[in-house]
Length: 378
Ligand code: GDD
Ligand code: MN
Image (cartoon, rainbow, N blue to C red; front, side):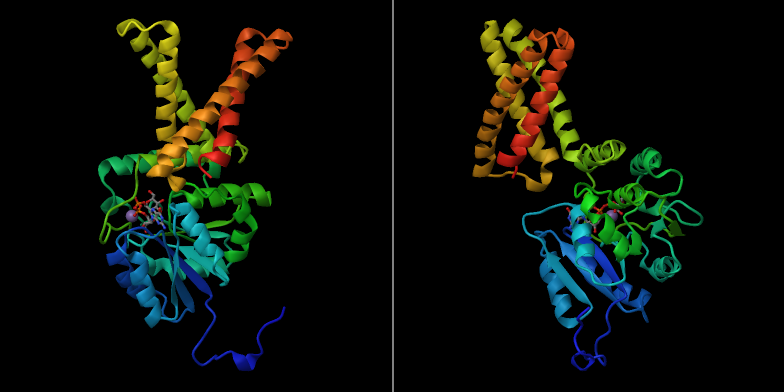
């Protein structure tokens, strides 16, 4: 490898970091300076850097992070424009590191940075992934969670046990540390959608390496948020369920496809309700009732996909309306694809009417998904 001659490296003032600490942020302005202070105290004596990955927060988190970076050589900021999402932010942060180890920690002080040296030790001793865990041993999540959130978290933990086996007591944790070479190996297969990056890393790692990753845990007390608000939402939950199914299907079905199909199913319901209403209550003739129902269902599908499936590329303003038009057009072709495939199968006696009908629907969902990804949510 071609490295700079030793004389060009000012070793008196610079040491290459051993550990990159990735801090994903969205509206965390008041949290980052005190977090950096805490990290400096916790990691005293370890060569580390802090990489703040901010999605252009309206509160100016990125600006503040860059001001910090001016004064501190071990702090830098990746300022992302036009992108949103916790998993993809963590991935970009880790991808930008050149240290031997990478860690991810929330900006809101809910994770206890004081256990980072212990986590690093365990990774240096050979663990593939070291997880800061809220549930094992003395670690607890009591003070950081409301009762309903605690319930949701417990349920989600059970669900993800399907993927990770019992190797992990807190697979939902957003607090972990790993060797960067392992990250590099699996990153092409990681889902960039949603919140649950650790779960994805472990499921993907197990599959790709053909063995169970060696996982170590370090317990800690989950603290209440320092300042600002949580970004947890229904969208995050939907993306989580999508990730589980996507992993069960061994990555064959991307999360966005599952959400797209789910939205499509909701469209069928909307269609039938509107059809009934137009035909029965408004006394429209059947053809007109069908047209109205189709338009309404396409529109609700579009809005839901824009909010949920493609929240990271959400269309707004004029783009919302041109997107809607392109969605109508694509869905019309999707309907043609549906009818042609079903008719061909049926008429060639390759399937009975039900199977032919299902094949038609599957065809149009796949078609609409693939084509709206090209034209609507690019
Ligand atoms: N860059 C970026 N983009 N960061 C984000 C985004 C985003 O779209 N959404 C959230 N974050 C950052 C927040 O700023 C925070 O630093 C961290 O991700 C966690 O977000 P919170 O809003 O604090 O999430 P939480 O406390 O509800 O969720 C916690 O518990 C989950 C498990 O129940 C986190 O620890 C998660 O990592 C964890 O999976
Ligand atoms: Mn939080």
